Image 1 (cartoon, rainbow, N blue to C red):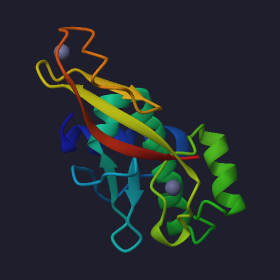
Image 2: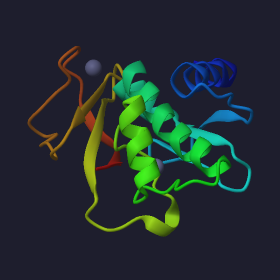
Image 3: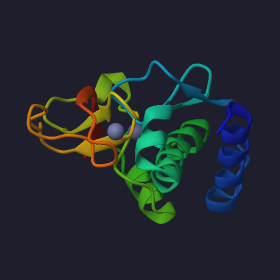
Length: 158
Ligand SMILES: [Zn+2]
Ligand SMILES: [Zn+2]
């Protein structure tokens, strides 16, 4: 998926679920390591972690977009746009968004996120996700029997 396709997807979801236009920019950010996406308060742009999409698929991507759009629309409407706000919780529930995200830096707390470990095969690059660390001396790639390596650890907000 390209940035242009992502932009169109965000615009479509915004219109379909929020009945409002998304008039800023959405793009993949390859440097985001620990969150699925983020909404930038100063530019109103939305950035999405491409690894989440590649590993978790389109359905998760749509969930992340809904979550970020909740921040986006509520912020522009001067309503409670933070995770702790009732407006945010209500809207997120209405559009079926996940707890996932983007913590806005000020409200990130320890112990609120759950870890997902991503392993990849060194020969065929197949990706595997695990909740727990696995013994890579014991396990090999299910597709090609190649060696596995821990690629990255991402955290998902509860
Ligand atoms: Zn969020
Ligand atoms: Zn393999």
